[in-house]
Length: 219
Image (cartoon, rainbow, N blue to C red; front, side, top):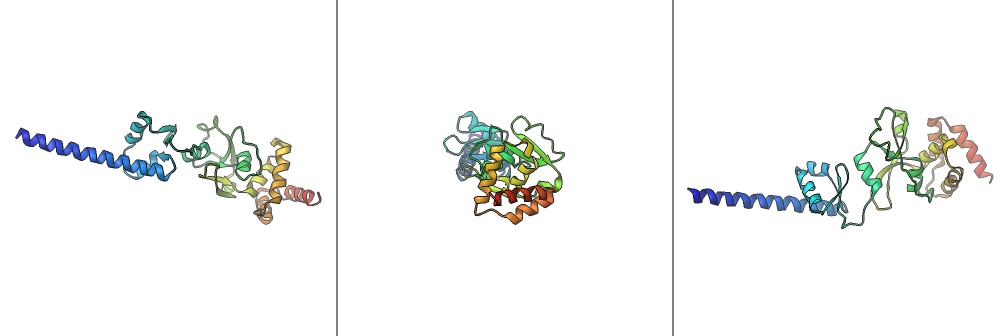
């Protein structure tokens, strides 16, 4: 009887080890597909216990970059913009950060800027980014996706919405950056002046936009 119990224990332990190996292999495959990045949510979606991530961190195979987001240091894909948005999906990159992502400035922002809906509780992120709050009806206006320098997709306002935001907040913008952004925008083949005018109408700055366009045309 004791021998039978011992054999059963051996089989059980072997099966358990096979499950652990299989799940670790699955996690490594997910990390490879994500170019070195994995989230706790991805494990939950695949019915894998988050303990595996904790164990890999303990072994030095993964780094915990922010809550629920992990990175394999063997990959050359460390992306703070992407990591932040994985954890804060309600935040849309805007203003100076959007300018940089759209190549409307060559200055890397000292502090990244994001926009959220009015009423959003920003206490968790106010020390890591500059937060702008807008009316709910303006929040989705111009929302799009763009690739970061590391090749990861993040949510950002498009060029036209970004230009409008700068005009709305002109008194707080660096004059040199403001002027250069406009000049670079006008030179882009992908610009959409009609969209710019539509956004300006929605945001109540149509007159200001037309005045700037008139000045640029006559330069």
